[in-house]
Image (tube, rainbow, N blue to C red; front, side):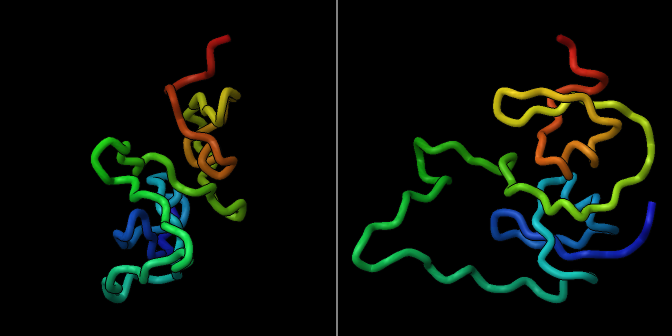
Length: 117
């Protein structure tokens, strides 16, 4: 484990992690190196005034989607531990040596161990 703190953001929530790999593994987007300094206020509304915005994901009838982070950056560093996981992206499944490697490739971990065919 390398201690190189980063500030991550997911769904408007900011959290400090020991390193980028841990942040991405939990589905957070890296927003800065070092610890999170302060909690910024809510993001300003986006969209065009001449066109209605998309509905908020958290409105009734819409699923809460904290498990759907944006694709992680490809420059993440992971440990070399071998703890295989089965990752899935769309309909594709693939075995990775650990959860961090799966996250760096843009896959969600769906099972511990190798993927079963």
